[in-house]
Amino acid sequence: MRRAPSRDEAGFTLIEVLIAVTVMSFGVAATMKVFGSADRTALSAQAQHVAVQQAQAELERLSSLAYGELALTESPVSSSDPLNPGSKVSGTSFTVRSGLSEPLVLTAGEGASPRVEPGPQTFAVGTAGGTITGKIYRYVSWRDETCPLSLCDGGENTKRLTVAAALDPSFRPSRRPPVWVSTIVADPATAPPGAQAPPGGAPGGGSPVTAQSFYLYDTPCGQGARQPPTESHPVRNTAARGDAADDNSTCEHPSPQKQPDLMAASAPPGDPSTPLYEYSDDLAGTYDGGLATVRAGTSCAHSYPSAQADDPQGPSKWSVHAWSTGALPQLFHLDGQVTVSLFTSTLGGVSASGRLCATLVDRTVEGGIPSDRVIGEATYDLALWPRSVRRVTFTFHLPQAEDLEAAHRLVLALHARQESTGDLVFVYDHPLYPSLLEVATTTPL
Image 1 (cartoon, rainbow, N blue to C red):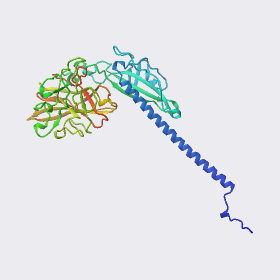
Image 2 (cartoon, rainbow, N blue to C red; image 1 turned 30 degrees about the vertical axis):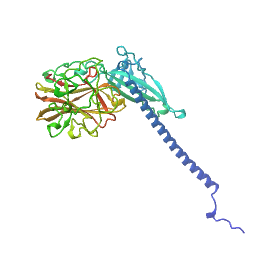
Image 3 (tube, helix red, strand yellow; image 1 turned 60 degrees about the vertical axis):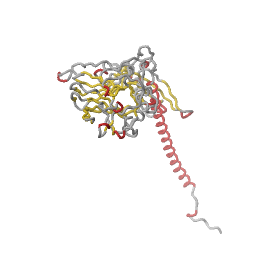
Image 4 (cartoon, rainbow, N blue to C red; image 1 turned 45 degrees about the vertical axis):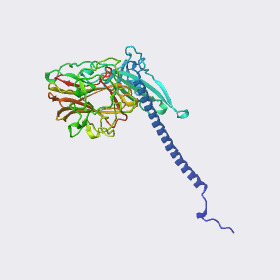
């Protein structure tokens, strides 16, 4: 007779199987929900990345247009939806941020036609079911620079280019706001006007504050006066330091190749046909003229050891360049405000960020050895350095007002820092590119 199976040997009952299947189905559903949520999160992140890329690419395209062409072809459409870029438009004004509105640029420059269509313009990236879509919005507004004195008279100093990329609702969960990017563009053909005293004079009713400009030249300062550039040449050793007189770049050095370049009050003469030369033709890279610099060093430097002048890995003659005034004919009072205005681009026109140091030095020289006193410095960062030659202007303040004695020299050093993602070019000593240093003073020269 066959023995009946014990309970331990028996299989699952139908009820037990149903319960197990039910539990498993809940687990599978939960797992699929997690996978679905992860897929949606990944798609949303990818779509946001696409929006950033589209906005940056459009901003770079607009930046390549001629300055006069940077005007809207028609008034942008306004919107009451706070997540629509048009919500920043009110009549002919554009709201940059709370409390700051700027007039829209609706008229092209003389002899030019407006080239900026406000949109919205649809974009689509990807194929088939993976296509990410959205819309591009463009705005151009007038910017009133916050640097008075000679560089910033009037209310239409520079143009602000602003681009918004808004994803279509299917790629914008929870109504995320659009991506915004912007940059400032100055007119490269406009030289700063002459020095002017701002209204009201100096605080406290003393001597009026005016602007003293020092234009940057491609002339060794030992020559005393600007010499018209006649040819391209290797970069000069303008900021070396060492123990011996021969190690130091000073206006008193017997070799013009080891002197700071000169800066003085007169704008470079000429016209648009004046030749533009390279001041660093020993460096590889594409640029139309001026000084190419190699990024190096992670702290501001106004000089470098003479023994390392030819070392491109650290601050050297290829990353730090200095200009000096002549010996000051009288006491020169610096009231505190300093403006640096440079025509510049990236080397080779690449898309890159830039970090630039500007240092002011009070210098005396004895026996060929300079005695330097740093009186102020500033670091200027730009996430998107101009790819073609444009004017970049920044203002900073000295920690305190300074007096430079007669026979002293004022030295400006520019340093292209390692944090830049591209090498930088500076164009000066040309009538179309009058780069300069400007200081507020009560004792103009």
